[in-house]
Image (tube, rainbow, N blue to C red; front, top):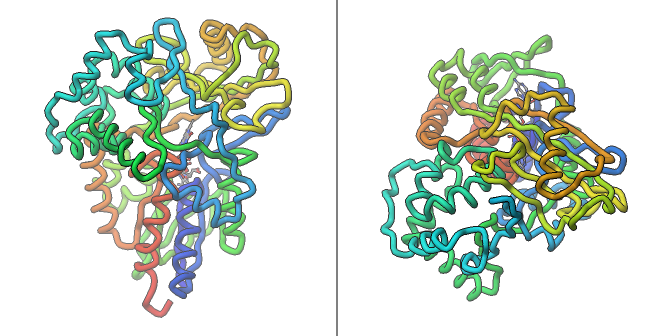
Length: 468
Ligand SMILES: Cc1cc2nc3c(=O)[nH]c(=O)nc-3n(C[C@H](O)[C@H](O)[C@H](O)COP(=O)(O)OP(=O)(O)OC[C@H]3O[C@@H](n4cnc5c(N)ncnc54)[C@H](O)[C@@H]3O)c2cc1C
């Protein structure tokens, strides 16, 4: 029996262990998996807390169905009856700019009628049709790309808030081709974004599918009845016949024969025929630096931003306006204390008791990292101030829950692709060591589950076929 040790029991590690075992089963190979998780519980950034009838997502709220891997995993785990589709009304998203909540246009043409851009901004946006294609080899920042193709106003009012909404990031340093690869491809494939979006809509209409949704990310958002944590819980349960060790921090990797020995803090070392590093990049750095210090430096150089999540519950009667949509994001230029607010109970059922609503605010990110360290009262006070100013909600919340992540989300900054290529080359050269985790090829749930499926054949290849 060959043993694969997965270090890190967040979604990436649990999904990688599941995928490796399934792949080995398909091939009739005898492989076991041991997952080492430093925290007392598996799940990593995925934590759903149910309290007083409210469900606060401390990390992710859901995943889109525009990529198939997470829905496929949920089905593989027999979770069809637990899946929860977002409400249709949640397709409506807002941006708060110039003191007003603007509904985001749902397709490129409705930009013309929308108040989110000035006439000048709209003309500049339309001029994108005429612009020549950029250099495909340049690793451009998101901000430079948007300024070049769509103008300053689109950057300020649409792309900056979107970058904050997805990455809690700063478009001035994020790499377009690593953070928004599909956008970079549209320019190269169709000669421009508007041309690309129109061409895709035409193709979608011809094939009877729904077209791309303009400004927002395409696809429908999904979760589970009791939150995203159901997925990691069910994954861990599916590994019950394997070894999932919590409170087990891996602190070193040592070569032993053709495989590895993983040292565990205060515990027994584990022998491995292959190792999957599914920790954040800075933790992977600590594990590989003794073997290859350059790989350690490169991994450590992937930056993370902090974030705080503040969930607030209100009585429905206390709302001066209905929470009719997904919520809103805010451009940096507005200089507010929150990055945005998700109207959680409008997005998904089962998030608040009858007669109440739940909103979830994100604070910090690259824009204002210092706010994350504030005490709970101060943080909640600032959030309430913003909900008062933007939505007119002045009532006392009936529910409050605060979560903080010192290093919440990895940032794909300019140079990411080049750095990643070198990291992957160096880690591969160690032999039978693999990288999973959201620091590399995509930061979202779908990326973690897709990556697990992509890695599994290579991991099984590495351990199989020699008297396994
Ligand atoms: C506030 C927030 C909101 C988000 N919203 C969304 C969203 O709506 N949709 C979406 O798709 N994605 C979202 N994400 C991203 C999503 O949470 C991640 O894609 C996913 O959870 C990352 O999983 P992971 O396993 O790669 O990393 P992690 O969850 O960070 O797991 C890594 C694990 O490794 C463990 N570990 C570290 N060092 C060691 C060691 N030495 N030994 C053993 N174990 C170790 C850690 O304890 C941790 O459990 C959000 C993230 C945050 C923070």
